[in-house]
Length: 137
Image 1 (tube, rainbow, N blue to C red):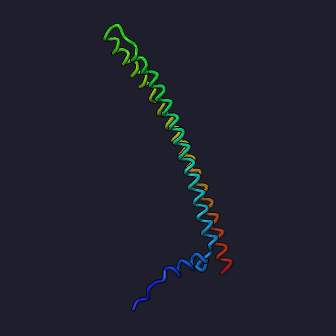
Image 2: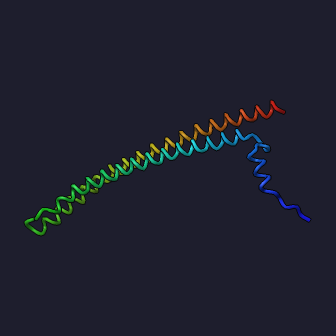
Image 3: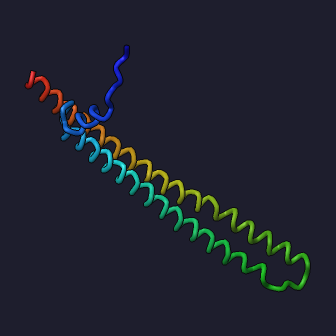
């Protein structure tokens, strides 16, 4: 018949370090957590900058919309006010979009630099581990 696998014993052996170097596992978990924390920091910083830009854009828009609160002498003046406000918004939009693009570019560069550094660190660790295995053999 078939033998039932004793998973409890297997996990006890793993955590007791019988199947490998637990320090390597601990280092892997720590390194992964550090990389995750750095990526989260980039994401949060980017979100904060985007929120600041969006808030500034909204404040600018609201200030321009104040023109709608003034009573106009002629009905055509309301159309002129609307055209002026919307024209100003259309002219300001590319500047605001450029600011958002700059934040995105900055976040992208920070992420690429972080991943490149992590790749180099991983490569160095792999070489070190390979040398240790070769030396032990």
